[in-house]
View 1 (tube, rainbow, N blue to C red):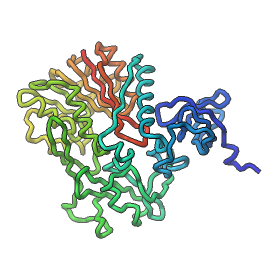
View 2 (view 1 turned 30 degrees about the vertical axis):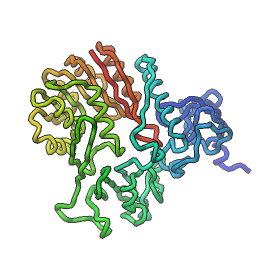
View 3 (view 1 turned 90 degrees about the horizontal axis):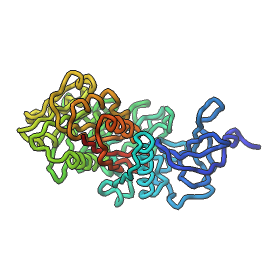
View 4 (view 1 turned 90 degrees about the vertical axis):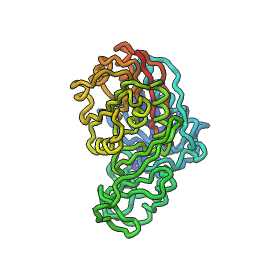
Length: 412
């Protein structure tokens, strides 16, 4: 006799990849977004969101009837069907993951910006040698009612306890976070910078002493970490909050700083505007690139990031740090600008910020994007304002996930 779960099983022929980590299939004319599949496969999938009132359905492939040659055994089974989020491409060979991300970038640019270019997606140094694993220098975990560390199931608030986290760097994995019991319901943040001998663990935002297995009550307990970024242009040291935003891939800061400096061109004496500047990842190299004869105006709205940036940039007189919402700061005036660098959140910059940047008439805009759709939308706005989209390069800084970083260069 069929069970309720059997009723939710459907056979699908899987179509192209789509933005968001799934592929598109059709069932009796209805669009079904399928996770854990690959284009061209025939799969048996369990419907996870369905119903006549929905414009599309969702499903997880639970049985592969005809496999793609790009399918490999999952390197993280706990992120498979019904499992945690954050590893939805763990069944895809690394070259095919990059082809997947390239297809998404190109499709979004074509659909939203009417731009037909081919977009390369480049691997980060060391990822191929590690099989796309062990790249996260920061991980966030949640604790179930039994005190076990884990992650949320995809599109759920249910905690799935884990035995390991294959994307975590060797140093983070070595902390033994899954080998002990934690306060039920707690949130764990663990950070070990690339190349560092020690890191920081926070439990519900407070420092935790792993050696003693208890919170660290000392007023001088560490809540910051030191990050090193080295490129062909130089080497920089940052001290940033362990709970603040920083690129999680061990090579991402250097990859992106190098890409931004290359894209910005000769900045000696230039006036640069660094929007969504965070803790100063780009601001510090940009300050050194413009020299004392130039200037950098950095704009950031997050209070914790602003504090990190003030500490970092105190000895760079050519930097002016403006704290506040980016659109509001731009409206209040930022002065003449030659080059704009912006690294907005996943939602993108949006029309208000794009229009304000275009009104400054910088000769070049370097746009760092973590969402292909937001990048394509904002690129179209810049083109409409008189800019040319000169180049777009993708960087695979999130192996085993659908996420991809991109750097776009626009000139006036």
